Image (cartoon, rainbow, N blue to C red; front, side, top):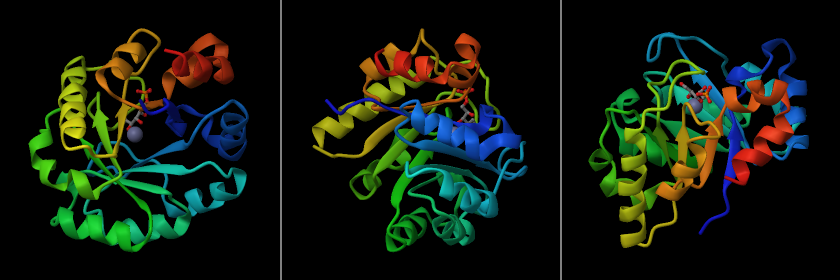
Length: 219
Ligand code: DX5
Ligand code: ZN
């Protein structure tokens, strides 16, 4: 079994202190930094783009796990690669040609992630699973932090893990949205090996992010 990794979402961080927040995450045992990029169009919320990501790059050596909730995504991918993304995750609905976008991320020598919304079936990417590094299962509808975990995500993780084992593939299974201390064990047992978390890490235990990361890791 792959080691469980935690990718804290800075969506719940103090946006006036992002550099320091990222340092704090690194010091607290985060494995990577989840950066939610929202365009106010593909999702009804607006966050940050390449200049801010580039500025944050100096604050940590941890991989930047960049979750692009923007459409059309294809023409922007290079900007995020140049800004310092290590993993670039896109939604199939946000590109006219998913294979072209996958190839583009590969050419830029970045890890390729595909994100599946709660209503998007695994079958639409099953023929591509040997070409990608990560599948991000959304356990909320993307757009906002602090939403409630959708339990059906567990079935989807199990289905994906089954396919992965059957085909002997190596992509990571990451889960995003509403992860807390009650469901983290279930998510891991279902087959996920990377947990994204914003609210639980930044708001629980009076913001003791080390304690919260440790608790999620030992689920
Ligand atoms: C939702 C984002 C998530 C979210 C996670 O669109 O992709 O990364 O911010 O935050 P919590 O853990 O608060 O659900
Ligand atoms: Zn995300």
